[in-house]
Image (cartoon, rainbow, N blue to C red; front, top):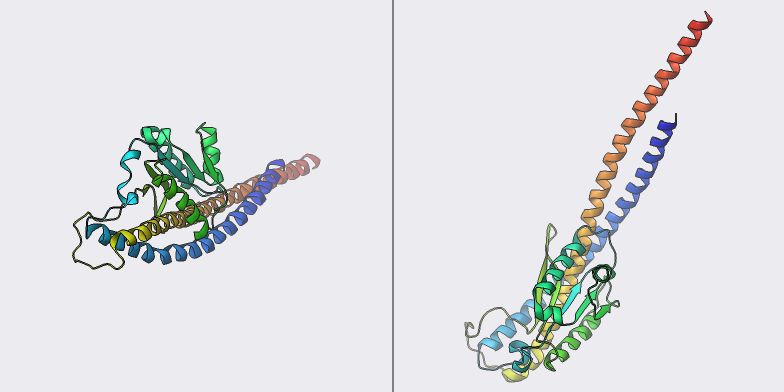
Length: 287
């Protein structure tokens, strides 16, 4: 009797867990749909800025410190920003990003000597556990990044890069490719690398105002848009990872409940058989 009671308690506990994971899966699915729409909506703007910067860089001899970097800062350390989540239960999302970030920092002397900044409580906790010195922990962005917050962060990086404090700014985050595929990446934010090479422009344009003035406005805007897109991709990837993890947990809880129900029926059947045998044996002894 004690065994069947224990199994029944486990069935109840597993059922409760399944209800929780199912609810979390539905919440993650809803958040993923909204975050995906926001991420996809911003990509045409970022692509247009990339095209404009490429045309400006390829159509003349104009240079910009955010594109070529400062020769005097070539020996300066690099700044690394790691984007993780505030909450767990999202499968290998945080571990994949942190594994790539730690490998990059340990294999790159400039990154190892430079400031390391992190977004997300999970990343900060892992880095603290591994005794990695974090120069700054950004706690104000969360899983709903606003452009104003990211713009201030990007402007701070631009100012430090132009001042020659760092030779490069790299962002380690999860890139959203599709609902079924996400991959950690190391993005070089500064110096800003537009696609294409100088001289690759297919047409000659006359710019008004001049290239230098346009570059002064367009390149910082492109760097800010690129960082904001990285934050939005990270949020979408987090919700996808949590949705997949909670679906797997729900399925496993359902299978465990089925297996426990089978064990309960067997234990209950054995108990009934034992009771019937004892009744028959007692009746035979009285006859």
